[in-house]
Image 1 (cartoon, rainbow, N blue to C red):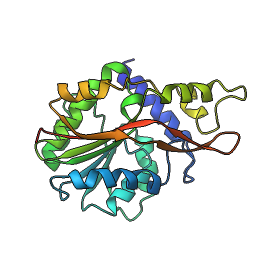
Image 2 (cartoon, one colour; image 1 turned 90 degrees about the vertical axis):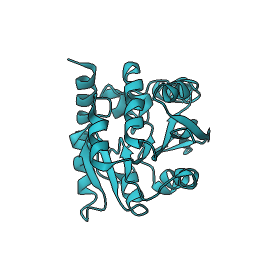
Image 3 (cartoon, helix red, strand yellow; image 1 turned 135 degrees about the horizontal axis):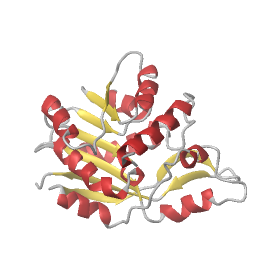
Image 4 (cartoon, rainbow, N blue to C red; image 1 turned 135 degrees about the vertical axis):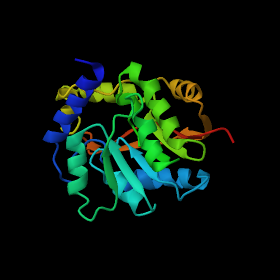
Length: 241
């Protein structure tokens, strides 16, 4: 079985099992504390807000629908059919379009770019879930989607998130309920070095236009009622200005 096939099947199993209740998934936080905060950093740096917006790794579409309230043409893409089924059921009015796409697959992003033209891209917490060998192809796919005029907003857990997740996984009571399914389906988060993203971006021909630190908010709480937030790094990227 190929790495990509194993990865896809793991996500299919996760999303088939996942509840459709808002906030039931570990990272499915309210857009007010996720995409809204990200857009405050992203929108001022867009060259063209009228370009299609691609939510890469859209999952059940919570952030996609938020983006669709603010941009004319939003496409949520994911490699999991089950995730897209969740997204479409939660969006009966069809605010956004949803497409099956494995951005790591050679030529897949180029094919979508041929259809959409240059696009702006939003990606939250996808790179660290990839196998290490798939990370550069993923960033290459982002470069293909943005083309010459698009911009991408990328946010990933920082190295400092590793000990936080490790501590949660090794808790005497076991991992928190919303984190447990991730490990059970074999899609445990992987650590990405803080200096890795700029290297991947440069190799893909993308420049870092802005960057910073921001907590990545989850829907889970510790036993004392504290919301779990993961240290993260964000980047706005595009072709060199």
